[in-house]
View 1: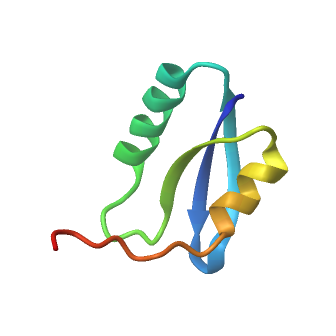
View 2: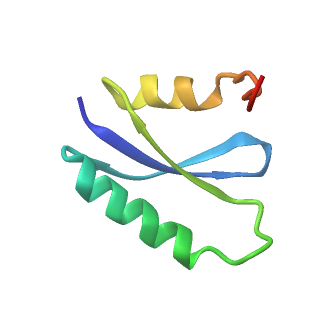
Length: 71
């Protein structure tokens, strides 16, 4: 399964950046994008592992539960 790198703007607008077969290549691209983003920007860069692009977008747009830290 490939790794998809996306830029997520306000109102959950997805922009597909690139698709990678190897995790390390995707991680390097993701770190580069995050460094290039301006501070205070509402843009988020994310990587997702999915079977295809439509599945990746569905997963990125699905609501997630808040993480509970500690007890």
